[in-house]
Length: 169
Image (tube, rainbow, N blue to C red; front, side, top):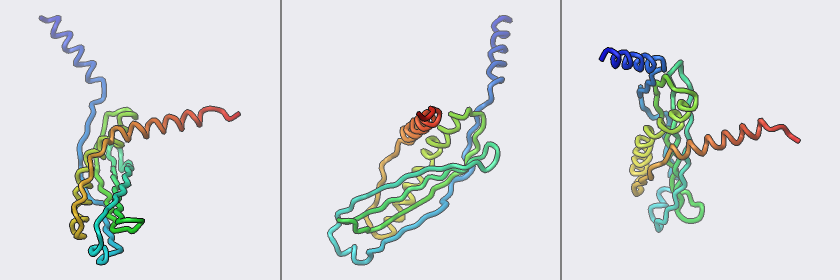
């Protein structure tokens, strides 16, 4: 029994040597929001055949040690027919996150996938609200796989790093 307690204490000591991962959401807010309907009111008198183009970007910056701002930018451009812009709805949904105890790869994944995953429902609701206020049908955006997007970005990053490290002939 004493031997088991010593083993437990030894394993607890090994775990305490590793930094403890800490994550908390400090604040979620709208950083920028806009809606344009350049063809209103004429657009309301035409046949509705929408084509949706969605642009999505993320960025982050370090505010102080262990504190990061993550910004998810969504821009929905809807056309009705040939390049006839019906409306543009844009939102920059941001959050402040406290993150400690992660290695560099884990931190990149958290900032590039996990945090945007938290922000997306807020951005999606803001876009939908803007569109409804513009008197257009709801714009329900599909969920986004930020883990897959982050993995693609990491592959590009690794390929660029490999390309830069190879000497030119």
